[in-house]
Amino acid sequence: MRQLFGTDGVRGVANIEPMTTEIAMQIGRAIAFIVKENSKTNRIVIGKDTRLSGYMLENALAAGICSMGVNVLLVGPLPTPGIAFITTSMRADAGVVISASHNPFQDNGIKIFSADGFKLPDATEAEIERLIVSHKMTAHRPIAEEVGRAVRVDDASGRYIVALKNTFPKQYALDDFHIVLDCAHGAAYKVAPHVFVELGAQVTTLGTAPNGTNINQDCGALHPEKMAQKVRELGADIGLALDGDADRLIVCDEKGNIVNGDQIMAICAQELLHQRKLRKKTLVATVMSNMGLEVAMQRMGGSLLRCRVGDRYVVEMLRKQGCNFGGEQSGHLVFLDHNTTGDGVLAALQLLAIMIRKKKPLSELAAIMTPFPQVLHNVRMTERIVPENIPNFPAALQAAQAQLGTNGRILVRPSGTEPVIRVMVEGEDEGRITELALDLCNVILQAESC
Image (cartoon, rainbow, N blue to C red; front, side, top):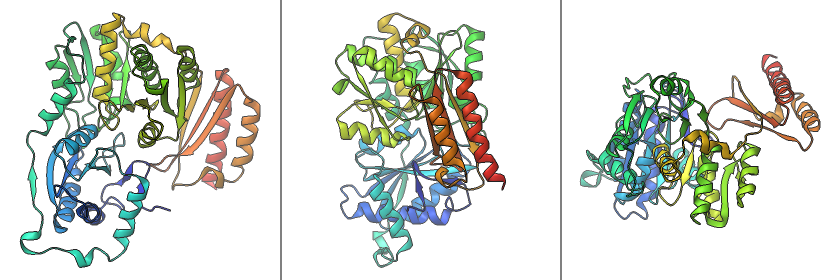
């Protein structure tokens, strides 16, 4: 049972365990200890989003890494996928991201990439936890000139911008597009506008004035309604909303209608199938993806393979099955032919290229998939708990599933990043699934109040 790492690294309220400078320093030491045994370059990249607490955690991680004799490359605010790219581009031994992604500013997190740009496997995260609680690292502290040093990499953003633009077809430009871009006051506030402007688009920006406390606040991928409203006001061609670390994308069409990750996956999967570039004709998605996506893939002559929730598990499944495209309904879209993790800006570029090739607005392309009615509720708890341990809940869940039969499905799971239980009910009758979802939430709430 891991104590620090969840589904996406370590996460919590900044300055409260486990997100303290003390633990961050220990994590830094453990990462350095592990990579040093097989180090090729003796350096680790550290990047972050725009949260106020990023400064203290950045310094603590760097101190821990340097104390074990490994050098640090500080890239400052940069999207999570950008840090994965820089890690491989600069041949670093590992990359560390300080971000709590879509969470509010008071939270923060630590995510780690291996030298190949992929997130650490569970076994390596477990080894980091064992090193922190053991005394194994104490005897290996270097002294004198063997201590590591930290330097800033000033051109990291520029390198990443060029890499993103290179994923866009050379024969295309965005001169005919007016884009509303919401960067959530997060890590992409500088990078993302540059990419689209340099490709020729007219860009109206939102969420590009971070102050350390406004990241994800009523903006970005979690709150795309402002972006959609601005698209309607300006008559723009498309709206793009990123989250705090820019690894997810939510879109709206020219009419201001929200297009989620499932619909984007259907559009992109069809294009890859058409180009014979979708390996094994298979799209990888999570258990949260809509049944309509599965139906759409079958109609296209492809198939859908599901995995557990979390973009890291999408990537693991892609690599295990030899596939190259997948994602989550929440907007994590992984194009393994271009990057090693979810990338909101990259995904937007792939979508825009399809719009250009097909000469169709997004509203027409999104019609490829008809979503089944789906209801999702988040029940906040005072502490993390497994749903199976909630009194009366297993029986209530079984009864609800029996009522749906084969015409729908229910998924109940604890969040891997916060004390929340997510209840999702999907089926043909929206009124019925709404009622069933509320009934299940009430059982959880009743147990919480006892």
